[in-house]
Image 1: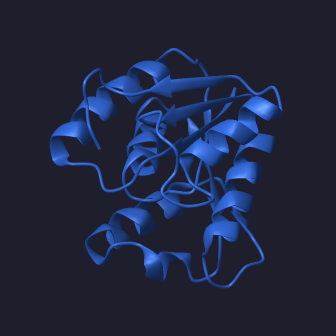
Image 2 (image 1 turned 45 degrees about the vertical axis):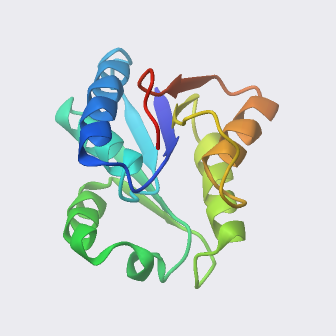
Length: 155
């Protein structure tokens, strides 16, 4: 099963730990999983590690060639490690990641997947190309979406 992830970045350590448990439960229930992720900090990274931990494989979808430069500096070694574990890397043709590149990456992930996990608080996006837009795209394409968000949590 090809399973994609979309989700919020910049989660508090407490919220990330709660989300980690939810993602691991969802991934464990999907048998032989191929995880499709942009490998951003937050939900993407938690998901990618969960997929690797159950023996699954990763497809990394990179929104732009300068994507890594826009990730938090402290997270880049984690990104590098996860990227090195990816069995397939899809590099989109954009140089600088912007809302359009992020949306195209979200669409690519959805189009290559059987299902989408969304670590989403249900709120409108803070800008185009974010989690809410990827969820809307998946739903418009008939791709099943599972929303994961701890009850009572605030981003």
